[in-house]
Image (cartoon, rainbow, N blue to C red):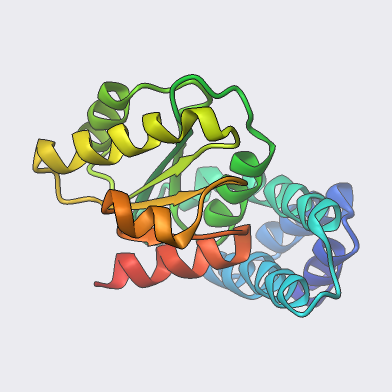
Length: 208
């Protein structure tokens, strides 16, 4: 199996083929960077483009992300070596009072698939835990998710607490009730309404 086959296996949601393909390429001595960037990240970039153009929808995007993650799990031990540098660390979680995680999980998988270290805090996370995680992992970006209108104040509080902490981290917020107007209002550094645009925003913020 070649790089192109892994690429196609991600696009056809074949987790087994992706994992086996990555193993085969590692055994063949293919550069880790090539497997990661050309096969896995390259495929997810296509997924993001198809989603943006209306050719792919959230369920398919989630399946592709899971297929990519299967390959990423095989690569992880090698990614920790000095030869492959992380693009930075991203903390992600659903804010206090909210138990929803499907959208958050998709965003986390796609950000990880784009080559970033991701620390997923889970759901119902209070502001102080976010501050602690950002500090411990020296994160460059914090992604906050909320699906309930009633938990938007918790999101606003988390952004405020992060800013008050003085930590040099960029905040991105998203979720069904969240808008760019709300993001501006609470002082977040960015807003995303879907996983592909979240990935692009992380890339942009990490580069600044």
